[in-house]
Every structure is written in C-alpha cells, then in structure tokens.
Length: 392
Image 1 (tube, rainbow, N blue to C red):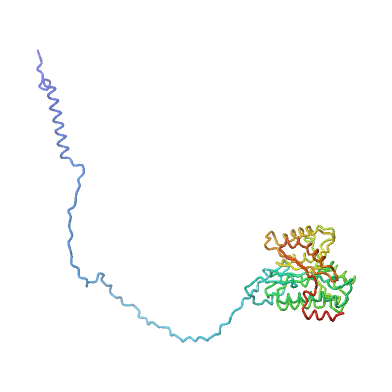
Image 2 (image 1 turned 90 degrees about the horizontal axis):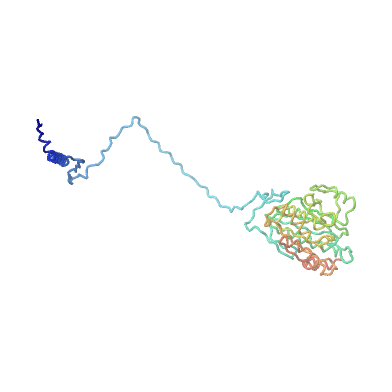
C-alpha cells in the first residue's frame, strides 16, 4: 500500500524558495523600522531684545552696619621741625689698615696715618740719575771708606763731602715721599748692614724726621773715622753678638748712626749663596735685607762690584731663587733692583762703567735700571759746590 506523500515533500524546492523569501522580507521590514542612533536637534530659540533701565544699579548696596562701640579718632599733633644749617666739609680718605700691604716683619708708624690721594705709584728720582716708580721702597747706601776718602785713601773734610752730598740727597728724597709710601733705609759696608728699622715705615712726618735723626751723625765732615772700617774690636764683637732684630743704642761710635740694627742672613737666606766666600757680603748682604722687606722698588748706591770673584750671573740666579721663595711664583710682584755706581775720587771713569756692567745680570733679571755718577759734583747744589771750594 503506497503511502501518500505530504504537500511539502512533493514541492520541497518550491517550499524552500518561499521560506527564504519570507525570512528576507522579515529582515527588510526589521531593518527599515530599527533605529540605531537617534539624533535630537533642538529648536533654535532665536534672539529676543530686552530693554534695560541704565539708571538701575547693577549691584544692590549693602545696608550700613552701626558700630557696637563708638570710638573717637585722635589725630597726632604735629610739632614744627627746626633744621640747623650745617656748613659741609670736604672729607678726606684715611686708610688705617695699610698694614695689609706691609712687609713680613710688619709696618711701623701706623698710628700717624694721614689722608692719601688716589694717584698711587710715585715717581722716585734717585740721586738725580734715574727715575723709578714704587710705593714700597728700600734704599741701600754704601757708607764705607770709598765714600769718605780722596786720592791715595786720604781723609779730609773735602773728601768727606762725597758722603755728605749722598746723605743730603737721600734725606731730600725721603722727605718728598708721599704719606702713603712705605720705606726703609740701610747703610752698609763690607761686613755690616745697618738698617734704620727692622721693618718698613710709613712715610709720615715723624718717621721722616726719625730717619734724619738716625743718620745725622754718620761720617761727619770734621771727623777722620768712617762707618765700618773704623769700628774698634770691642764694638765689632758687640755687633757680632747682636741677634737680629735686637738693637744697640748705647756705647756707639760718634761717627756712626744713632742706633744699630745689625742685619745678618738667616739660614733660609744664606742657603742661596753659591759663591767662594763665606756668604753674602757688602751690597749683596744689604740686598738680602731689602728682599726680605718685600718692597716693590730697591735702590743701591755702591762704589763697585767688589764681591771677590763671584760671577754676576751666579749672583743673579741666587737672587731669583731667593725672591721666588719670599714673594712666591708671581713674577709681577717681584721688586725692581736699580743700581747707581759712584765713581771713586781720583779713579778712571771707565772703572765705574765696568762695575756698572757687572750688575747688568741682576738689574735685567729684576727689570731694573743702572747708571753711574762720574763725579760727585754732578749731584751737588750750588751751595755745596761753594762749600767744597772753601774746605781743605
């Protein structure tokens, strides 16, 4: 018996097409009616003008509050101010701390500091022979027989006019130093260096007068004894036993200065001498004293080189090592060393030129100048020349 087939089984292909169309129709209807995002655009309200009364205050004033406590405000009473007329005075600049530029041993005479100008750096003209600048200066002056003797080493008032003239020019130069200058002076001979002070002095009137008093009795015209060479053995021994910087002021020879400081080279200075003698002597020892004062300018008045056979180049090298130890490596701080050679009375002037040339290694090493005085009359005044004519 055959089983009767259902309708969809008979028309399977047609049924599938109808089903597919139905599903797509439903999806199309759903896609049309479905909204993913709804955008709402507000309606434009437009602009509406409003009349404003400009007399109406924008901010309502706050009500005034009554103070709880009544206070009375007291105004200060103004008194008249009386101003007394004062005459203005021009103030001068005083530097009381000049010790900051002193030598290692210090500076004496600071209590008498005077007003100073602003043109620091004086021009120093030494014995009419050379000009050098400096504010801290040491003068080294030979005072032995070569400055008091005439021909054949004879002593007379006329021959001693040489040192008298040197001392007078030195006094005049120191007297003209500005008040802010630091200075010191030392007389020397072969075995002695006698400073005026163991430390630098400020150039006050008192210290200038102190120098005049100190050297006023040195090598007088009427005597025949001379500083250094005429010391008796007892006084030489006293000087030898004098410890630096002690001073002798009693029992002094009448032809010497009024007090004695006997400078000797300490071991830290003596080590620089490499010559054939026992150490620094004559002007060389005096120069050691000047170096230890740490000036910016040194003047030496001498009558010759006279340091045995010591080579000038070796001496210059010794002083360069010495000054480096004292001043440090900055060469701009090193002093100038200036030398004036005085031609001895009765000597050929060529010998003075030769002696001056021996100092060239030293003056060149320390940016100094050198010169000679051919005849002491060249630096005498008219009055001194007239006086010389009347002396025996």
